[in-house]
Structure formats: structure tokens, C-alpha cells
Length: 460
Image (tube, rainbow, N blue to C red; front, side):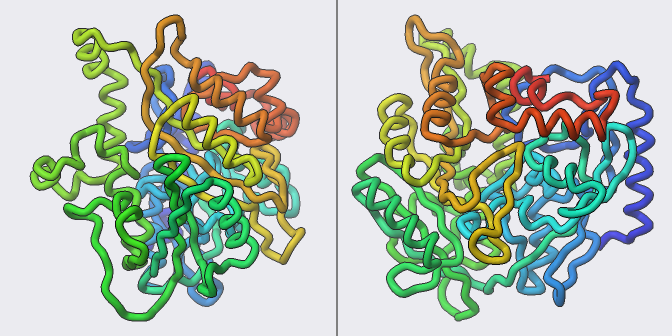
């Protein structure tokens, strides 16, 4: 645990580094890892000093809360809470996602069908604003406008230095049921039933996600937290987790391994680096089977274009990156999946049901203006990560633009961690432009922090 004095000193360093950035230069965090897929212009000014802001300040088992610094990675937060039999209400899939990043940039996981998104478990947060001040924002009170607008603001309104979040109990073991569906409507009906009853076939469901391999082969993975002893699987070695969904109807993992089940192979994306080949896997060090290692390799490719040059030398077409997570209303999910299979053709895709959290019972969910999902509406997050060839006569970005149109037509929303192509008018309508501007003018009156549209679409 970090001492309060050390935290205060780290915040002071952050404020000094902010004051040192020339007013005409963009403000960026000097952090070693990132889970963004948006290429950005290289900064000319030094980044903000966030050293000392990556830890857990306090875990209160009785109150089931934790005070956490903004740059704390979820793997460190989980290490601090699991010994108490607790976990955050939502733990995003990748180890190095930070709590501050998940709140300002959104996150999701298999508990989201009952706990919503990570920012919905925040009780209060300290924010370094564009004016260089530290303010404490809560759901009510003087800075409630910042609290409400902070999620999905992507650092355009400020940076979280401390967050107090709610925790939930978790068993030592997680029992899994992998339920196969051959019709997408049966899949979505099952999601609706589990979301409403939090059970399936008489068994409690604490977490739910899934995988679609084709419109005729999709699975829900229904998880139950338990303290019952029993055998557990290990997918950090030769076995690969996503393949087990097709092979096993029942499975079990330790709570720790369940939370990071997708990280070892970056869902299925490690195949692009050959890591799923049995021979390569035996010699690829286990410490390198992590999403942040794969992400560093992707950033190197973006910078040096080695694979792209080899493809050109082989006469293969250029490829368009299609790396997105979208939220589709449950009643439109089957239609979107069929459209995506026909128009894009990437498989597998990840399925993660979502409903805004209702902490005080039905009708108590609050709306979040910069990512305006409807309270009381069931959604499915659909994640797909890869690339497709650019067809003759097409342009780079055409597939992503088509996805954006389809998502909007179905009343859905798209996360902004990757490429976006909206014009400003559409972007403002979809992502709370009026609310964002009002909060921006109050907390960053000189607009020192890069704007939301400029970050998400203009790649600044």
C-alpha cells in the first residue's frame, strides 16, 4: 500500500510537470503502457510525470471499498483485493488497463450485465483539471457536473489522480458453463433471461460473456463464484482459453485465473504472432504471454511497417485495421452479428452483455452523457480485433465507416479507444457534445487539454 504522504508528493510532482508544459503544446501522460489503438501525432513537449501514482492506497474490507491511484493497473488492484475475498465490480480483461483509464475511457467485462461499466462503481475521484487544479468530484455537490461527464472524456477534461471505488465479494474458484447456440435469436433470448433473473437452468450466474465463431455457432460462458473446492484448469501454458469454450461444457478456474483468462492470449489475437503454434508456444516465455507484450509488438509494426512492406513485396493487398468494441441493443444484436459476418467476416468475435447499473433497484440507473446508453436497456458489447484486405476501388477506413453506420442505425454506440471517422456534427450528437463543452469551459477554460473530438477522430 502507498502512504498518503507519498501520494501527496506524487500529485505535487504531477502538478509541477503540468505547469512546465508550454501553453501552446499538447498535454500528454508520460506512461509506459497504453491500450489505445489510435495512432497519434508525436508530442513535442515532455509528458506529465505520473510516477508514484500507480498504486493502491487503501482497501477497506468492511466497507468494501478501495482508494486507488489513477495510474494503478488492474492487475495490481486485483492483487490487493483478492486476499480479502474481494474484487472490483468490473475488472477489464487486460492486466495493464489502469483504473483511471477505464473510467475516463470506458471498460467492460463479464460482470457488466449486472454491474455496468467501471465508472459506475466510483464513489468519488480527484481530478487534475485543465486549469491545473485538483478537485474532488462526487455524484452530488459542487463538482457533480465533472463527475458525470468524466466517463468517456479520454483525458480531455482532466486526469484522475485518486479514485474511491466499490468492491464485491468473489469466491476462490469460478465454475463455468459453456452453453452452445446454433441460432442467434436463441442466444439473445438467453442473454435476456440471464440478465433478468441472474440465473440459468436453476444455477446462479455471477458473470456472463461469450464467443461467436459463426452465426451458427455461438457460446455463452456463464460463471458462478464459489468457495467450493475442486479441480481447476490452467490456460497460461499450452492450453488456450478460447478454444476450451468449444471443447468443454463445464470448466473451472481460480478467481485470479478467471479474471485474467483473456489476457494470456489477448483473447485470440496472439495467433497473429505465432504464439498459438505448439512449437512456438513451448519456447515463447510465459512472462511474455501478456497483452501488453503483444501491444508493444503492434506499436512497433505501426511505427516501422515491417509486415506491411513484406505484404507489398509479396503482391498482397494493403490491409485495413478493424479493431473495435461496439454496444448494440439486445434486440438488434442478432441482426448486427449477421451483418458483420457477411460484410466484414472476421471471427471469432467477443460478446459481453451490458446493462447500466441499478444500485438501488430497477429504475435507479443514471445516464452518462458522454456515452449515452439508455438506463434499463440491455446491450451486448461486440468486440472484434484484426484487419481485412482493402478491396480494389475501396479506401482505407471504408470498413470502419460502414461499421459506424450500422451501429448507429441499430441505436448502438462505439468505444473510442481505436479508429473513429465521424464528422464533428455526428460525433457531438453521439457523444454528448453540448455537455462536454459546458464542462470543458468550466474546468479547462483555456482549453489546454486536447479536445475529445481531436483525440478520438483527429488523432491528436
